[in-house]
Image (cartoon, rainbow, N blue to C red; front, side):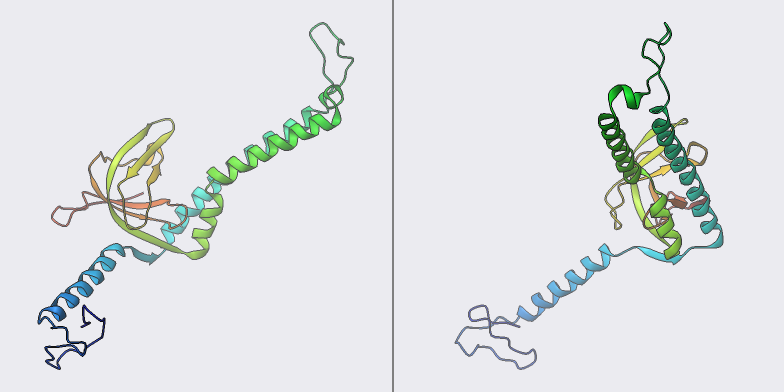
Length: 224
């Protein structure tokens, strides 16, 4: 307990009614201080409710499968950029024939402008590829070999059968704003549902989901 006037610490159990500075001590000071400490401990425990486990063999296979999909996407982007570079060296012809003199785009627009254009396009492609791809995060998940499980509530759902579905989540312990489902793996969930998600900590790839994940409800477990 501390004196409210001078801040002097006074051990509990001494039954001291008055501080050395003359300030009268209240009997319930210890109780109030203990309650504050208890409440702070409960708050910390409530914030840290993330279950961590090692990846199972089946979960590793799922992560590897998604890595292969990401590799195909990166390969397609790389091929597109290489083809763009090759095209700049191919002679250009108009519909009327050799109006452009058979010059390539590199020669027609100039070597420096064309090279700068390719560098800028390459930088843009690289930026958006790094920003949107989950390849590197999935590789990290596979190295760490861990999964996390959180209990959260569905805020709203966006998407369709062609592009897949984004499930936006309310504020949760892991600070994960949304998860993605392919159209063929989308579970029958809707806005307002409580769900228990098991996913990778970096790429947030959903490994399994428990529908109606309330303590008082019967759980419907579905492995993706």
